[in-house]
Image (cartoon, rainbow, N blue to C red):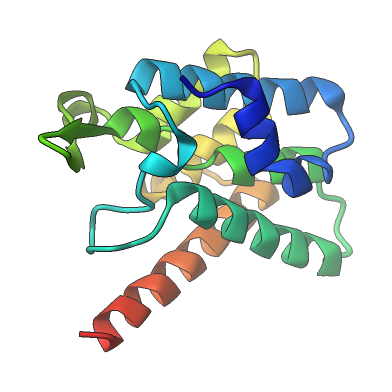
Length: 177
């Protein structure tokens, strides 16, 4: 079982960027609920993506996206909600804990994941844990599901930072073949 301490340790640097202790606690609660519902014993068991082999760890992707988001945030002059932005980055892919299953030692898209992609399940988990709607919106709209919504500036940043990391990682894997 993944403990709150495991989550705090994994995202220790990134959680420090959030001023609100309430939001920090809710981020940890969402990750904990996701690992419990998904049946994961370790945070690092879950891959970043199933779209190509050896994609790396979901936690590493989450940290990279959060660092990209912070870099963009630090350069912008517009009024952005920094706590919401960092929280959205930390939670954007948490639904993958429900989307993926381990079957015969291999990680695959599970039955639940065949019905609900990670932006939907992640947003639902966050909403159930009392995460503010603005952060739930970032989680839901970070991927293709958000293409038909009006993304907030914070959601727009997370969306693009996520795809920057995905495309770079994917191109590195294709080049190594």
